[in-house]
Amino acid sequence: MQILLPRQTGEGEPIPQTWFEQLLKELTEQFGGVTSFLRTPGQGMWQSGRETERDNIAVVEVMTEVLVPEFWRSLRERLEKELSQEEIVIRAQQMILL
Image 1 (cartoon, rainbow, N blue to C red):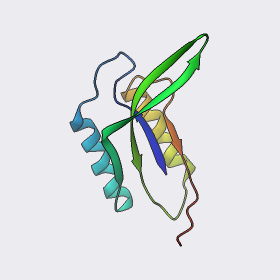
Image 2 (image 1 turned 45 degrees about the vertical axis):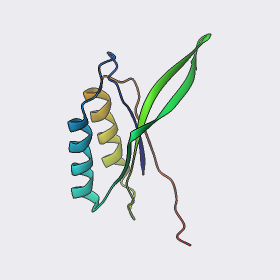
Image 3 (image 1 turned 30 degrees about the vertical axis):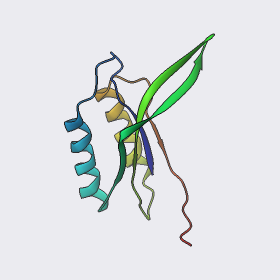
Image 4 (image 1 turned 90 degrees about the horizontal axis):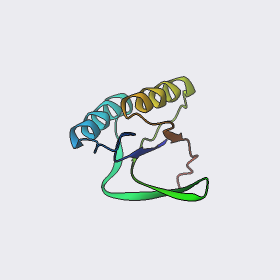
């Protein structure tokens, strides 16, 4: 599972490092581990009408054998509310261990 998180709230306020740390702790307790890319944020870009909008993002990854859509939907809704975002992307990717 991959969670794409903004580095700022919908109001433009920086999201505190402690907030990210709490989320990582929660996911670690739930799934036994987590990988995060917080220190070097990625940059998201998208078209909004005629303008290109930009956003610094952090990526959090969790590996799980069983996909429970209700859990991830609930988490997405909670994160959207906490961070004042219209949409948080949480996506599932199939992994084949080689």
